[in-house]
Length: 393
Image: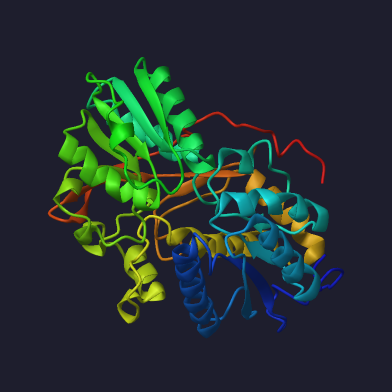
């Protein structure tokens, strides 16, 4: 439980108590580029809030712990944030493994938890009443990708990294294609760390019209050049995670024409709004050599905005109000885009605590990611995997 359990009028009412936000940041390990940006944008957002009255008149304090992109460590740092640092809320890791391992701890300690991992089970079989995901699910992104990709053809081949990330996309894309009357001709698994994809690409059926890829690291980058060199059939479409944190101009000409589903275009000039300008100001990318995370950087920022709005809407004043705060999310709140929600308008489905939002399709053109279109989402893109709202506290 938080250190504010039982407090009356101490937090969230302008009386001077700090609202403490924990962050599970993947500062080292495979997802360190994500941890770097989530920490950076939240630190600057907290400074901005505190310079402008905090939340409900109370300052916000951010406490950051490194998960090392490891599920076991992620659970340990969650315990530290809750038991030693007395945080009120925790914004989670980008790692689905960390998110899934932490979910039961959120239930155990009755702490509202906002995981950034995208595995469907986070708000499904592995979810519980204390887990609220404002980030998209793999299932949501896959449905958006399929909706777009079916314009190029109904015969698909899926090339995926053979571990959880790729397997989730494989299953979600296959389901989406078949729901729309299409056919997945083949699903080709690539071991993690594989750099030469020639033997895998040679297995792609000749009549493939859409070549969906859910790959990471060297596999993802070499896929682009090698599929071009081999003349592999199919329009290339994938998840932005495959090239997040990568300088697109360094990939080479083989990347041209590849398309990705994303939360936000990376280049601010491709989708410039008051909200995206403010988000970029909070991230301050000009002061670092790290490549900007266009498609994911908003998730942690908006988690804090959701906490901010929930505290206000429920007159939250401490741990005794956690249940009311969760129930507010279960009422299905919706917001418009702006400086609090720079990614755009979005809404929650109360049943499974899952947010839905517009998505974007980007294409590599001239050695850069360019916005192809925005896909408007005004209703849930998939059925709930669990009734979290129906569970007991």
